[in-house]
Length: 265
Image (cartoon, rainbow, N blue to C red; front, side, top):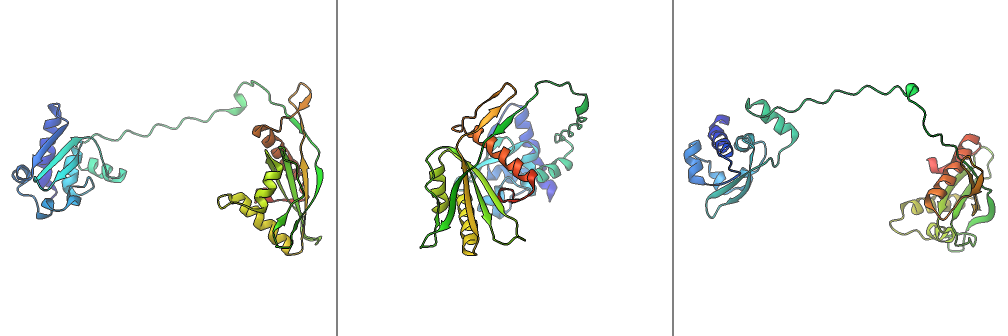
């Protein structure tokens, strides 16, 4: 049955060799070419799908695809170009067709660079410094919602420390940054439906407080940076600067190993 449609492959290849990239064929022409189309070819569009069926492989091996089928006119339009089919199907088709182009071999893997032998270029030396300020506590109000201290509407960093009151349970820190500390606290109190991080932190803080824990809040609204030429002010209005300070704070907290970092899971 697979060889029945070989004439279709040969016919389309001949058209392509003559520079033709589109052709319309009546079902009757295909009947004569392949010895008769099955009844489903005259009423079922899926029969003409560019998939792995034997008839589809015939035109796909020639580098053509079915562009449209008109059952009212008993006509199919073929065009040059690969459409449809998975890589596995195309590979199988090529394996059964000696005239099909072979896939290119995978490029040889390149040897890894010897890092120790690479020449040095520009050194990077960065030192960030800032001091946490005690901003008070986060508590639950009478309605059971989070209530934050009245933070200033300025860019900066914040650190929420979750204390359990049990010496056997380590304190947890959550460190973050924002271009507006007041707005960020509002997001944690009333997270929007798509604010996934705010929803998660709201849930963590609320549950911790409901279980009798406490949450202390610290902020930083000024920082300095030294890149090797002397310390200067770090512009916390810039996202990159706040992230630099935030990651420095996370690194210090992690290295101290005295608390658990909520940011790190």
